[in-house]
Length: 230
Image (cartoon, rainbow, N blue to C red; front, side, top):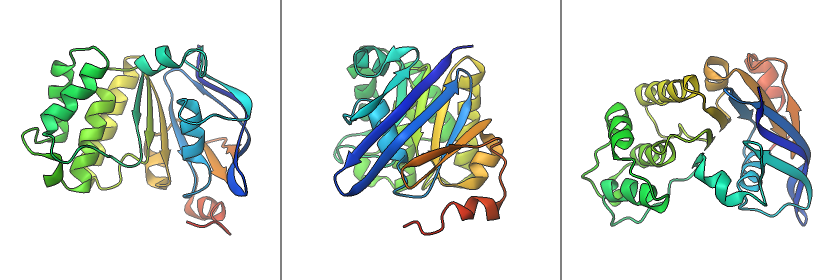
């Protein structure tokens, strides 16, 4: 089984501000991988480097067997990315946002989008300005999933979702993973990792530590947050 994600000795600094240092990570195909850590630990920096949104100084990254820099365009065709904050044009209708996300890829995703919208109870007739944070998150989930990518990368996806929608979201992840996809889940919600992830790693102060098991107790988890700005 090949690795869906291979990061070797990634280093990215922001001058005096913390970035990430010597991060190495492998995620096998078919995994639901928990990427854990407090705010500011380096999770989003790692993800943005993976997706080509940040230029990194040292190291290498491969996604789906392709080089993250040289093969950026091809990689993005096969990745479903959901950022931590869901930003859309306020005046657009939900249906138009979802269709636009598909059109950018040159795909007709209407059937899959309708299935996801039904699962998450997305009101496609509303305008973005009318939506709560949780409902904006649901639109972002649809945009990330509707093209049935080989690799999902979610950055704090469940903030604002009620418990039932969180359950439906993870049911969708499991459904796609069962069909061969891989999921990297960046979060600081321990219960999500313990319940849904098969493997995990934790970021602290820009460095990464692999975990023998994603099943960790509260005290162990909180020990990684000591002296961190959460």
